[in-house]
Length: 319
Ligand code: 13P
Ligand code: SF4
Image (cartoon, rainbow, N blue to C red; front, side, top):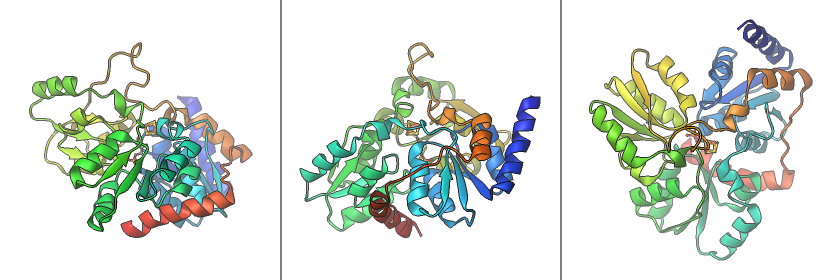
């Protein structure tokens, strides 16, 4: 416990000395989330992280999250130094969407508007017309569908089919998935709901359809936290990475949050409700990167310029 206090103090001092700001995602360690808020940084979903990083005047951003979040920050602010506690923190959606394979998939369907999820590499974003996050993907596809556009969607198949069902858009889906959300189980959720008939079910749309179908609220991490605060219920079943419970409990004290069921125990489930890459962010490696100004994120400037077009379409739409 003493080491934790010392590390936190060191991080606060280094953030000041380096003119750096900490931008954290809701799935990282609670101590990092608290530090981000307390030092004038932010803790949020991926859309708000992108906007905050772009607008903040600090010359150095430390992104506690996964690689695509650091890359997006760099693409939006190439003049800033972007550091991450661990450069190996990636995402199964990003890993499952190779830029060359993706480019040939797009080449085979030149009649489609290419919409990609934020959880992708800079090269994939550079090939896209639009980048979206979970908080706004549905609205953007609705907008494109209303213009008569046919969509090529990548990489998350669950988010893609949820948006397809809601909008009725013509969507061709890449078959990627998030290894964390893919583990949530519909039948077991149904049984858990029967034990807690008063509970409201909060679901991130990267979850499988038979889980999404049972949701009272479907949304991004920020939207799920807002629902936990605003809904009059006192018990919630939460189908997303359990890192989010830290903020839910702080934001809605006195309410009860139950994790949605996954495939089983840790022997059979690769990533029971917690992202192994988000978990690579800790106090120690955060302090080290601030000390040494190491682990800088680089994006090829030409790729970044192109990727920025698809990211800015979303940011302009959201504004
Ligand atoms: P949000 O944009 O909802 O925060 O989601 C990011 C993510 O990686 C979910 O797994
Ligand atoms: Fe990627 Fe899933 Fe981890 Fe989010 S939780 S970063 S989608 S692997």
